[in-house]
Length: 206
Image (cartoon, rainbow, N blue to C red):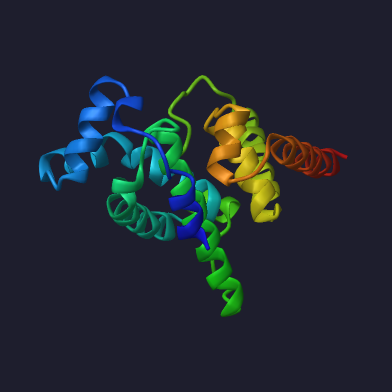
């Protein structure tokens, strides 16, 4: 189903709908130019990893998913016709792959993924600013943990829309394309996700 969505989203059009360097890079990749493929990966791998981590909450899974994403990118790149920015098209692949992985987890009753707050506790580095008071550092860590716990608890559809909007800064149109939904759906999911996050933070503060 996810593959069908990717192909349908890029059906008609011409290469000249892309502009400049991106058009050339995509065309070279589609022709099997290894240097161009390496360049594309170098430009987008950080973005892909960070989005995968925010959606999955697990560093190893995010790294593994990133590899799958680029394999899918190069397999489906000949279908890309420039109806969106290349970055937004890749966002869509990341979200679909992450959604499929979470479904795989649920089908196999996998409950061992590391939550975002657990990752923070394990990997967070101490503050490098000696001027910050210990109480402030503790408060910042507590708030970050609460935010991550709340984000981790959201349903995947709400989590993905708020990550794309609040963390990655995508426009509503870009989010709608990345998720394969309407603008109205984007707005309603954002409203529910923000309300859920606010409720968790208010409860933690009381």
